[in-house]
Image (cartoon, rainbow, N blue to C red; front, side):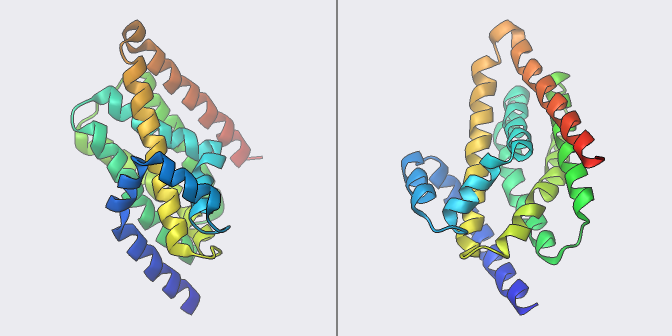
Length: 208
């Protein structure tokens, strides 16, 4: 319990540093150097984790794609909401508050829902979009919280996965903008459909 409390305190301090972490996203050379040179279980391990999980990667990419597709303030509000709320999920993960099958189910559903709104080109009211992203961010943050307990440097691990998440969001925004005018946005909608298909695949694995 003492270990969990100490790690949670480090996680909270790391979450407070998210604005600086997001600035590091704009310095890819620096981020790459830390990712390659950091200790196992530290920044490098945290940075690599979202990239290694295809289910995490596609959901985070979808957040950026949807923000770019909706335009306006959603371009930055959705990607800013996700890593912030992930910290809440991370704290829940430290205490084991949610059964693992529920987490896997929610992560698969996040791909289906986020990919679906992109495929349908749904311009949701801002509060609904933020709420959807926030709900799924909790479940994506949960496994990171579980891993943080085993990290050699929990704060560095947390900053690592936050920066990595930001990189994926920015990639989604870039792809969304680059393809948004191609075939009247049909390619972006096609990417959304592909993310839905991936979510359905992961959903079947939950019940196997």
